Image 1 (cartoon, rainbow, N blue to C red):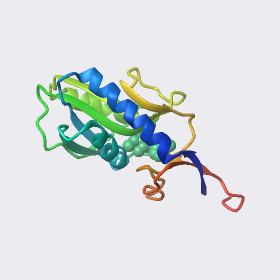
Image 2: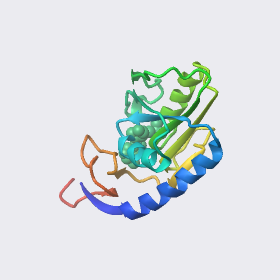
Image 3: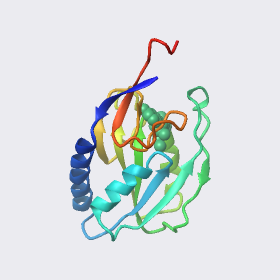
Length: 175
Ligand code: IMP
Ligand code: MG
């Protein structure tokens, strides 16, 4: 496998400034709790959070990954929030929404805790593979259903720390 350039650091940074403005505009005086979904969102959350400003609290969750074949089973919470969210505005920060299954489960689990509001910002969204009914409120880029890596996103823990986002391409020698 190899990686070809897809979104450059500068394109990502420019879009994050716009996203931060959208988010500020949508929340008015409220500062939602930013909930990063580990591991993939850690780079996006670091950059978006600094773009939003120092008043935004941050917490993390981790959800067990599942392979496509067994995706009917609900993913499991592996690391939970340390923050009480009842009555608060919560903004889930995702690296990428693909089928939307992970998100559907997370939204369901967090809504039981009765936050004042819960919305989602995702850097990347694949409309062609999305099977959910609720699109994320804030979307960085809509992309084709190809596998991407970098900027926090991995394939088997590889390429997570790339500064840009790349697309995986099959080498002739791979098969
Ligand atoms: P979903 O439940 O199908 O929406 O998948 C969401 C999760 O799958 C993401 O948070 C990622 O961890 C992973 N994922 C989906 N597509 C990609 C991709 O193109 N690159 C890296 N990870 C991905
Ligand atoms: Mg993820």
